[in-house]
Image (cartoon, rainbow, N blue to C red):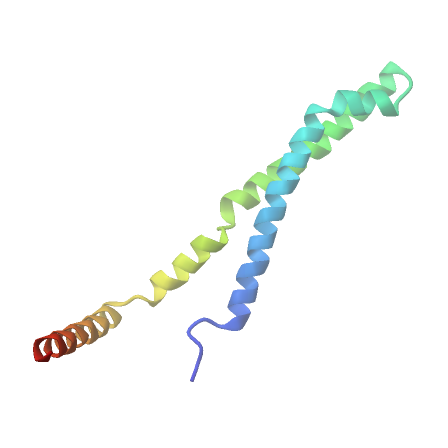
Length: 117
């Protein structure tokens, strides 16, 4: 019997969810580092000119990371959304009618059992 959802797909979903979570973490760390860049540059550098260069470099790197993370977060669905997409692709009118017939049969059997008692 073939599995409904491939184990490789479940693993891939887990890895995508890990990338999604890591992107959120990197986004917050980068944004925090951008805000704190004047303080970081002040601690690292001794003169004012060098401090400005270091601060611009920190902000530039963090801005690139923030942009990449925002793009990843926008285009990578989370785990719940991926499972919903898989379920939606497997629901067909034929599956619904088969399930509907089985539910009607089950309700009929329950009604007969209740009536006979």
